[in-house]
Length: 225
Image 1 (cartoon, rainbow, N blue to C red):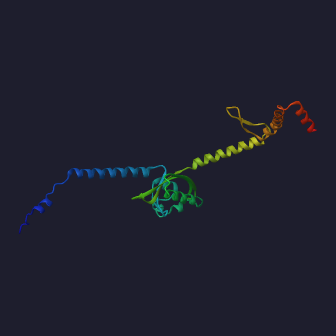
Image 2 (tube, helix red, strand yellow; image 1 turned 30 degrees about the horizontal axis):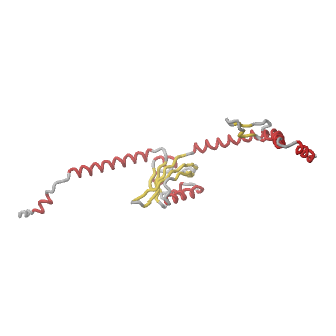
Image 3 (cartoon, rainbow, N blue to C red; image 1 turned 45 degrees about the vertical axis):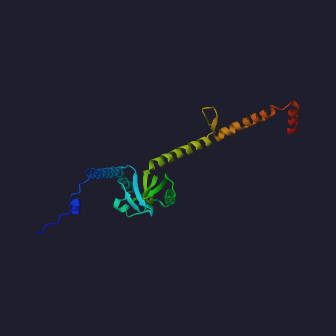
C-alpha cells in the first residue's frame, strides 16, 4: 500500500497545536450563557405575576405558569390565541395605543386593562411592557401583568364609604364640619351653611361699614329706607 507523501503543508495542518486558552474561554462563555438562560427561565416560570410575549401582530408567543393559572387557559391553548382574544373589547384600544407608544420610542408604559378568563370572569390587570428587539429592530412585546382585583375592590369600598359619609353629612340636621390642623374649615355640611350664612353676611356688612364716616353711614341708612 503506497504511503501518503509527507509534505510540510499537510504536516502543519495535521499537527497544528490547539489553543487551549481560547477553548477554555469558549466553554466558560457557553456555561455562563446556559446559567443565565436557566435563571431567566426559573424567574419567568415561577413569577407570581403574568409574564407573556407577543409578536407585533398580537399573536401570543410565550406565557408562564401564572398566565395559565389566572386566565384558566393551558399554555397550548394560549399559544394559539392573539392578545385581543384575552383582552376585553373596551380595553383593546388602550392595549393598541400603548404598543404604538412603545414603537414610537416611549420606554416605559404602565396601564390598566381588563381581560376575560376562560370561565368568563373579567379580571383587571396592571400591565408593564417593553419591546423585544432583534438587532435593533422591534419584533415583539414582553408584558408583565398583575391582578389588581383586590385593589379595585378596596377602591370601590372606599368610594362607597365616602358617598355614604357625604349623604349623611348633607342630610343631617346638625351642623357638621371638618377643621384642618391650622384651624381652617375644610368642609361644612349643607345645614351648617344654612346656619352660619346669615351671620356671615351680617359680619361682612359690618366690616364694610367700619371704614365709613358718620355722614356716609347716615346716607347709607337713609338710602336703605
